Length: 150
Image (cartoon, rainbow, N blue to C red; front, side, top):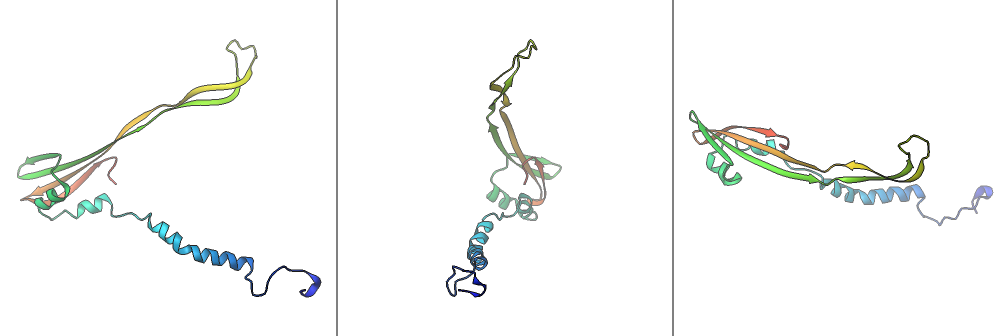
């Protein structure tokens, strides 16, 4: 029995609770690092598109495909690549429990189910248009337009 008369149910050389916690944390650190590494993202759209500046038209078409739009004005060619994604979220009904009051205002409310408007359905389109400026079959610059250019 330890000094002072207190009885401790602990084996010799057994780590205390704090040490056990630290060991557990240290054991799980590599797993946590692996999970967080999975969250890492690659280069942004802007970074990927800037790699084409100074490169020939043939590389642009080979890697991005035939442009959706092409126009030539005063010796300058513009290639536009359009990316659209349609989204739809279904609506919902409102439901709840609570007092429901009569329209004639005579305070004869009752407690029961109530149905409401909920949320309406929603449809929207995300768009990004990347337009490359080419002169003498070489990419000079690019612009991005839209709500999904990330």
